[in-house]
Length: 216
Length: 253
Image (cartoon, rainbow over all chains, first blue to last red; front, side, top):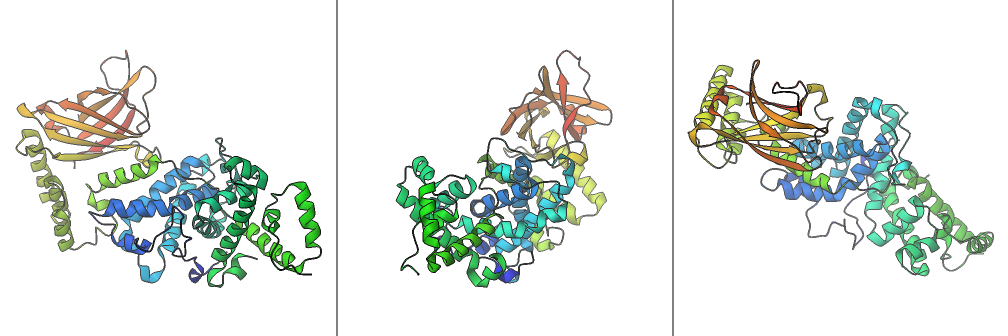
């Protein structure tokens, strides 16, 4: 895939109103990393977890194809964030890039350790069934994870109503009318939100000139 | 032709979310509007990128609490944090102000020769079992990990044993077990203090599975010479001999 570090989406460019949105008066990821020493460790790690656990979990599902392994990945990744916080240097890249590398490394270790146990799981959650085919080798498994990470971060910065229409339409396969019926939101509003969500996604994925690389 | 504003249904059409009549209408519009055609091409690029998106799922709510609990437990063993080995003695001193008396001894062990460390451990053991360190906080904290060693990190459960001195030389053992699976039917767990082939039972218990199980047990003063803790799964009616089914193990630091 080969995307340069400079192409990372800037997580500070979040839409207002989103539950995961980092408000201007909230510490940045990098500032929180400096607090991962006692006594502020729990508050700082808790905030980083709120911001990134869905991305780590989702990318884990995609790489590992197994919910329990993805849960273990989340646990090991955030423990490693705490244990290795001194190795993070904000001058060398964003926290998101560093966390992606940690996630990929831990996922690869888990994949190798448990290759014999990897299997696709669909435990009633239709989305999990879309996790990748685990028959691919470890390197193939992580090759596309960087793009997954970036797309996940772009989705995370959408506010809740816009994220919801994308989840229900793209991942859930619902029509605009079905989304309207399920959410109780007028059909016209659903369409407007869909158009707006696409616009935001396109903007997020094309910041810093990434369009030619990511969107092709 | 190029319409003044992008048709409001183009995005929904790109997602395939329109009813058949609406879809036919926008399809017809696209044949003559270059502006909406360009918009559709851009939206289809976003669609292709979305194929790489992970499934929109969140980790279970309890996971964050588990991670923070593990950090709390590992803070009692500062060597787990990367870079500790390279820490200066000043760093060791700085951290020691925040740790218990017991952990202060543990940190000193990093810089003392092994013989002195062994003596220190012996002193700690004496302190633990003869009760001169009488305080509410535990005087010894033992990490309990799944056995055999190669399964560590795979089984998903772990525990901590905290030892506190009691009157008359007895020791209270508080077990904090996380996600420790429930015993099989007609079975229970038993905590042992072990030295070589000798064992002292500290009592039996069951667990709750997901979440934290806390158990309070007591051992007699004689356990002071037994430095390994084992939790075994025992079967009802199998007699007093311990089984070989070891679930968790920990050694006195």
